[in-house]
Amino acid sequence: MTKRTSTSWLPIYLALTLIWGLSFLFIRVALSSFAPLQISFLRIALGAATLFIIAKSRGVKIPLDGKIWFHSAITALLLNVIPFSLYAYGELRVSSALAGIWNATTPLFTVVFASLLITSERPSRHRAIGLLTSFAGVIFVLGPWKGALHSDLIGSIECIAATLCYGIGSPYSRKFLTGKTGILEQSLIQLICGTAIMLPLEILTYHPPHDLHFNSLLAVLLLGAIGTGAAYLAMNTLYREAGPTIASTVTYVMPIVSTIAGVGFLGEHLTWNQLAGAAVIIGGMALTQKTVSRRE
Image (cartoon, rainbow, N blue to C red; front, side, top):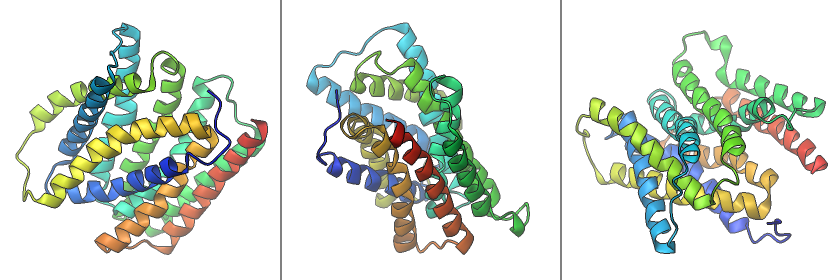
């Protein structure tokens, strides 16, 4: 399907930036009652349940092809199980606003691993400059002059590792799953696999939620049903309607939402180097997208 020339996709775009930008706030709130692995498990399971209801209402049948399920399980590990858990652990140490900034590095790793997994996507000289610029922004956000063991370092590494998984998982999914089944079926199978992977971990590490309250329950529900279930369908729709270049820019806008939410609702603060580094990261990735759009 060719993409539309109008901006009919704009409401979906704005909704996604809001939902995923707020997800870091929701994780922070959920941590007041739930353990990191509990948040990851509930997020994936609720997302799977949401998509299952949608699939049943549409009469969609789940394909039984073993290869699709195998590759979906790998994709679930890379795009759901590992990064969701790492972000939850990371936000025990860093602010939700900083976690949102680290998420902006996702396209950096995606471009790198796409060039390795998809032979037709070799980075050009201009794209390489953009990648190096973004990497410089990463170093600036880390602030190595603070010392190797400053308090944000471990949490930041966990968040960066999560975006690294996104960077591997996205091109992997495109290589082995795109076009093999419908958008809804693919997303549902992926989340079912993620739930199955997380279930034994949740059983082995389970302990009752502490200081359970409405806000934490609502945060987990929104993370799962909206941020993981419905948003998956919305992102795939945006990709189809607006094209990959526009869809990828959601990642650049999300840190703005996460920063406003973290500062406004949780009273968090960011240092000058974190804000400046975020601008360099986004600027570098915008440069890579500009070169892509010229070739499209």
